[in-house]
Amino acid sequence: MNKRLKQIIQVTVSLALAGWIFWFLYKDIEIEELLGQVQSSNWFWIGLSLTISLLGFWIRGWRWTLLIREDEGKKVSSGDAYHAVMAGYLANLVVPRAGEVARCGVLVRSNGISMGHLIGTVILERSIDLLFLMGTIFLAFTVERELFLRLAGQLVDLDSLGSTLIKNLPLFLTIALSLVVFFWVLLRRFRQHSLIQKLQQFLRELIGGIKRIGELKNPSGFWISSVVIWIIYFLTMYTVSLGIQSTANLSVGEVLLVMVMGSIGMVAPVQGGIGTFHALVAFILIQFGIAEEDGKIFAAIIHGTQVILILLGGLISWAIVMKKEAWIKPVKP
Image 1 (spheres, rainbow, N blue to C red):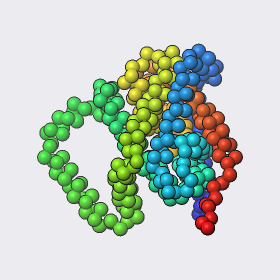
Image 2: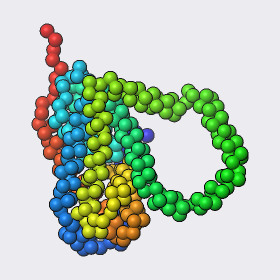
Image 3: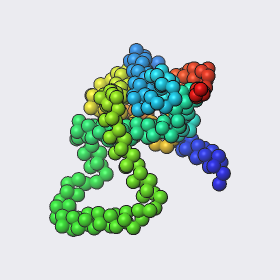
Image 4: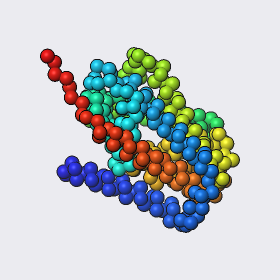
């Protein structure tokens, strides 16, 4: 199959899936009800959330500059990286995951940085973000442990499961050990398989990338900015919750769990997390006793305002980048 045709099919399918999920969620909500919620919201808090988001985008750009080698092309400023990041977010609204390549392409054009080096820094960034997401999920579990257990209890009988595990502990240990041996033999047998090699390469790059962070000129700046980025994600969600009447009384722990569900929804391979973000955020809000319609409208407001911010900010950044002359490598005398 032609590569371009394959990409078109992938984009079309992901967009159709996102559209279907969104339609299924909101087909029973009247537009007047949505507009009424929007008009009754406290836009001071929502505006503050957008301001915090912009700060987060800038910090993400600054963190990226810490990973880019100075001997690669023209030095990348925080402004250069910010505009590249915004252009990348804009591209993600059209093609899932295209933003990572797009923002690298911006710096290739404007600063002459090699694409291979930039892709490596983005992979490392995303790997670190994945670790922070896992850490945030664990933190949310710690803070809202009872809710996690209650949700799990709706799927399986935890008391019955625990007693069954204790009664059959030798059997389960034998099965677990057998699985470990099986996968070890499988990895040894098929270690030349492309999938296994890709997994091994990813793990090597992740471990090597974490080690390289310690060799940066400002490793503490990288780790501190990474923490701040996730704090900003939380503050963005928290300020919006204060601005909407139905969610104004959510606790810090509950908002943290909403943020975790939203982050998982954004990871889905659809344009801008459309549909998946709304479904997961609305689901967890319903568990907190918020009406289904209010949960869906909250998700629509926070996602919609962020999309508008990315559209405006991304287009402005794209225009600024395109006005700049492409970087030309100086000719040595």
